[in-house]
Length: 121
Image (cartoon, rainbow, N blue to C red; front, side, top):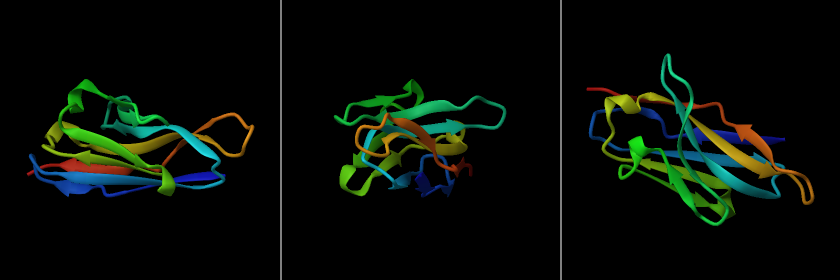
């Protein structure tokens, strides 16, 4: 089994910064794409940012220039540096990863439990 554990959420004022972390553990042979989604109250879950195994990144238009995603393959960890936060960034942020649990197995998709980010004065 694979677990994704997020950390780093919290309350921050508009214009502030937060850094989210997501550590993958368990049966992991390799990780392909890993990234962050978010879901605000009453809205659908949306992609925030992702990074694949060759470090190609993808960002939602709403966060380009403000958020930076990075990954540490040695630690099976992905980070999301969020700067210039706005009230509309308030949401539960979920980690998502495509993991190959063992050599020769197909990739499987996993979700973390989520971490709350609240941007408010």
